[in-house]
Length: 213
Image 1: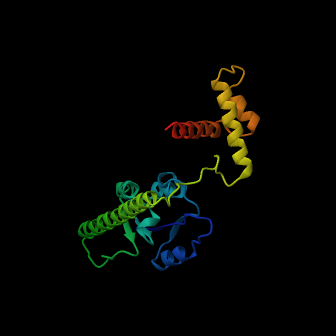
Image 2: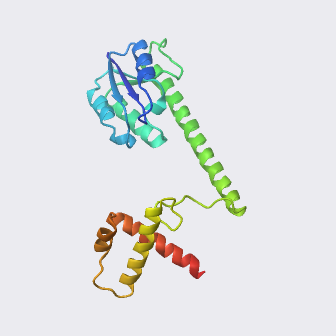
Image 3: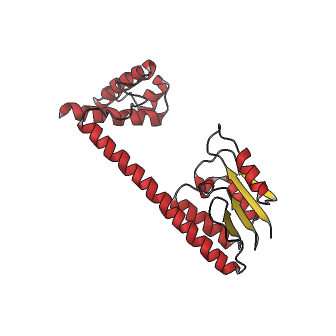
């Protein structure tokens, strides 16, 4: 049996040292570390670790959120670990290493992991619901104006405010029948990506609809 560690930080200003120290103290002999994570399921070091696993290996992480941040991702990763014949040990969860029967030990560990996932998901749902309620109250009080758009009439960037106005003007000309203008040409003229122009077009349409009400 090999003790295999996985460590991850999600931003560049975080440090792996604390996780690595705890993993080594737990007897880990091989560590896969991810300095920056993208989407949970796309992490290259995580995939390398899953491919490296063999029967009876033990995967050790400092906390469950190092594997994934939502129930769906965690379930998929844990199932992949089990599929390889390995077990999971989460250092900040209760340890059942003293239980000799591996099947019973895995069963109890799985129950604890599922409970942790449920609690974490409930906490996230509660936070989102409170945020939604707070936004609704702020809207009724006239205190919530929404997120300021990067390109828009109220953009804090003067150049992007100008680009937005010019883009709206050119889009209106195109809509009015100027067949010489294409969206790709407009984007090129303004020095922006086509996807940015499409976003501006959407904002412009929303702005017009609000004015017509």
